Image (cartoon, rainbow, N blue to C red; front, side, top):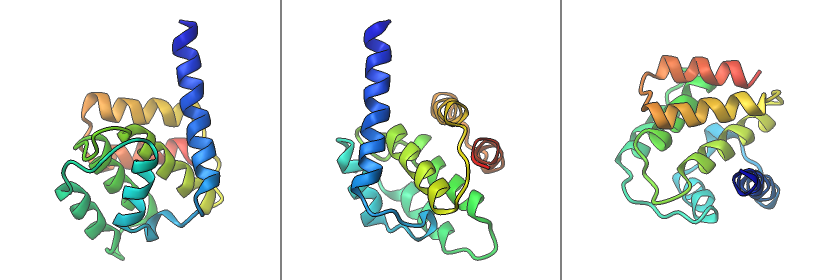
Length: 138
């Protein structure tokens, strides 16, 4: 139990340190290259990029809001697992960067719960992911 907590806390610290190492960017202006660099920092490599390409196409859509754009990106990362490792950590990084850039408060425990459940339960509905993001990032 203690080692699980320690590992969990170490991953949280890894994310926090990584956030401060990289220049923060507005989540919706992130490029695919930036995302790959973030994931590489967590030890992952790109396996498949088709779902990421679809999500990045949605980022260009001016008709949908910021949370929905983030939902498309997180769905591509958490459900389709485009990286060999660090999918949840990359999604968590994006959510924290989004919150910080948009001066939003984050309920950390709720965000961790939502990210884990999206990945574990393969939640694919953008409306559901959007709602989860809005409940954790206000």
